[in-house]
Amino acid sequence: FFFFFFFFFQAEDGIRDRSPSRGLGDVYKRQVHGQYTRRKLAEDLEIEGFYEIGMQVHAIARISAYTDIYEYSYPSEYYRSSRFEVCKRLIALAGYRLADLLNKYL
Image 1 (cartoon, rainbow, N blue to C red):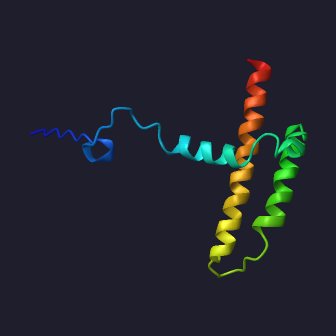
Image 2: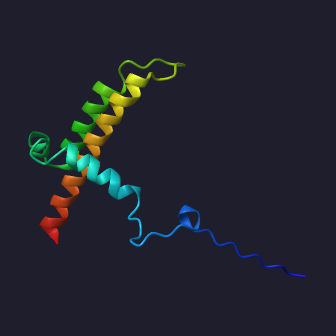
């Protein structure tokens, strides 16, 4: 005997809105790009080339991610919140760079 079970899962426990949700990605994108405008990041965006960008991100990580944290310890709330801001800045930089690249070649 073969039994087939079909499970249908619907987001938000079956609650439907008139306008479908665009997802959390859009929410975060608006927050990040609202906080880190192109003008605010203009100096960082002047750096071009994959190697140079990689070195920039490595320097930011070395300075911010690898300080004030110790082996076998749980990161403090201050550490987590401040590093979250660094991540949002880097995500905004990556988004602007990707947009520039797509605009250049498409």
